[in-house]
Amino acid sequence: MGFDQYERGSRLMPEDIYERIASRANTKFSLSRQLATALFFILAVATLNYYAPAHSNSTERFYASLMLVLVAGPLWLWRLGIDHDPPFIVLLSVIYFYTYGLGVFLLRSFSGSVYGSDISPQWVEAALRLSLEGMVCMLAGYYAWPWLPVASVMPRFRMRWTDRRAVRAAGYVLAIGGVAASLAQIPGLPKSLGQLMVYAQDSTTVGMCILLGLWLMGMVGNRQMLLLFAVLVPLRLGTGLIGGASGGAIFIILTLVLMYAALSHRIPWILVLAGTAAMFVIRPLELPYRAATWYPQGELYHASNLQKAEYMYGLIERTAVGGEVPPEVLIQAAAGRLSMFPMLADVVSETPSVIPYWSGASYYSLPFKLIPRIIWPGKPEEVTGRTFGHRYGYTPVEDPGTSINFAQEVELYANFGSYGVIIGMLIFGMIYRSLLSMFVHPQMGFGALIAAVFVVSSLFDIETGTGLVFGGIPWTLIYIGAINAFVMLLHFEISDLDRHAATPALR
Image (cartoon, rainbow, N blue to C red; front, top):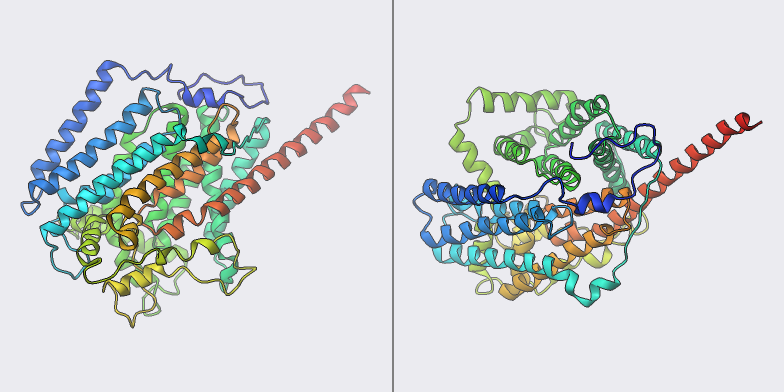
């Protein structure tokens, strides 16, 4: 598990959490492992280029290959112990390559929309060059942050959860309570309370991270972990799939992977690859599933969660096992939904020659994010995805409900052009590192590790608009504060019980 068993009779949590994260004593990145890693990246680049479709030219493949090579940089720095933080930036780099580079080697058509024609190679190359520059700037901002003067004045949160029993109890309560909230259906829930339900469901992820961390430190037995991996995780992932949003399930898995890697110093690449394979099966099935369950005319619109689960299971079984859909069709559908560079190319081709820059208009919702809707019921809604679809012709103007993912890098270009991408991605990289540094430091404590993993995991969603992703950070920090208060309350209650139990013995 990466660590020796903690003293079984101890009720105390270890205080050396930062040392456990930063130490590489038990997982040295030996020369042989470095060579094996380098060989893997070389083979991956060669294989992808060999099987790339004929219509992708050498320049496009070159830019995409460099994005994959760039993933090796954060991985090397983390494995060597130069980067002491949890490997958030490593996983984010992989996601970035999936989003802006992998499709070059898979897609048979580079189209900005489902029904659009192929985009000219001129604009595809421009989009891939911008994507590469954006990735470089993101990494530069991330690694430059500790050297900037402002980094020294950032707040440092200490969340020292000291009693193992209280932490373990909190893990169970949050994990089980979150699953219950995910399974519950509350019809007619006001929009002002909708976000509270989302955080109630997110408690599952926090609880699972707590239990996983305790297990990695030898403080929870294998039987308890069976509850986590055999019951809680499948239930939470299943509720996400039933809701028709596989992205939520993907981000839960990535959060657990990040938690595991932070304490074990190993990224479970087999799990990452298995999740990738599952994504290429499940993502294409979202459209028929949503058609059956989301809309009034769908056959399962009024169905129970159990009926929806059976329907989803049937879709997956017929697709993955029965071969109802050819693998090539699944790959094209999944890669098309995952890849953002064709949309970026489409936006580059029309902006500003046909459609003027937005000049920051799409970020209108950010100043209002701190005001809860329960206080301001008329607060402007986040409709940037709908406006984007109308503006660029992805959805008809008479369709007021359909929203298009306005990926953050696409949004930067649509607002400010190439300089917007360069400066914006540099700032994003700084934000990523600054959030980690607020929680990961020598005086952090176990609670701060949980907070760091949960807070930054929401930033994996780079294909969603800036307002929706970054605008939620202040409320996520408040939510983490509430979790910390809950755990500390359990500490006090258990300490009080200890005092009462000890009193008769002293008489």
